[in-house]
Image 1 (cartoon, one colour):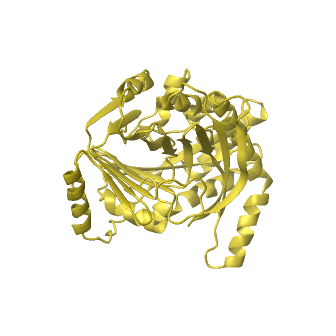
Image 2 (cartoon, helix red, strand yellow; image 1 turned 135 degrees about the vertical axis):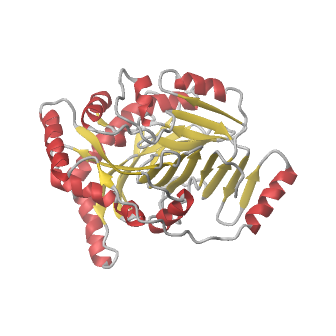
Image 3 (cartoon, one colour; image 1 turned 60 degrees about the vertical axis):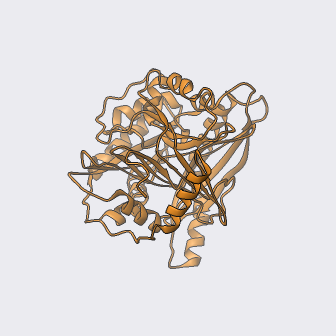
Length: 408
């Protein structure tokens, strides 16, 4: 459907019948733009607050990882070949909300809603075509990555930090793909509850994320960090259950998870009523098409007179994508990674007319600039004192598995 040549958010979020707590909307579509704000880190949140002031409709958009430079005394000097802005939000022309049995269409007129419904009904279902093979290169050779992890562990040993989320980039240059087709293939192979197709002009995000960053509903807020990954065995149900239990009982994975839970509790305490922040679920094990994941849920009651931007500023970037303590590990991330994260490990989401919101974590994603013909896929893992560098490298390959299978 060619409602817009420049802006669209599709399929945020789709739970694919997962038994996932705090689910809200099965699938969403936001297309076109009435007005928008685009900003670089520096005074981006101020510009966004002015943009949102008085707005009574839906707002969609994204938060780039490098907004950290506005929240802390940090910088980003690596190259960014994709080019998403640090912050972008827009009021869409059309919003479609899809439930299990119902569809709701929000637009300026009833007749417009009927026209949109008719266009959706008359659009044939098209099976995504397979892209030409895309060969991915790696910014880190395996031995270089392993040596880097060893160096990072020295910072943990010396007490600089407790955990570091370290990422590496797989990429391809001068490549042409059909982003919607690739997104369809990716979500067919790896359907996840926070999958998102997101386009801003020539920049495309094809996201198969299993992770929620933060959600507000009424006076309550929840965060659901993922820390802990184990492979699945889809050919042997008994072995798959054994793998699931291995994740639940693995001391390294539990320690990694609880460190981030403590960080998130601290973040939420800045904006929640005293005594209301609690761990609703600790070490929850959820099974996705490629991997088992350990997910914890932290909740609280928001203080009065705070808006959604106050909550984001207190909690961003999400602890699962940084480590702890935040500022120090973000300095180390900048020192040792080779690529600017950009939208990767940022968030895409929406704010409702009632002031509620929901944002994912941008992981398990392909980022593509159709003008530069540059394709990027970043993956990472949490490094602790007990990390085995070789196993951390294998975890990165596991997380990138669905993307590599679609492209290669």
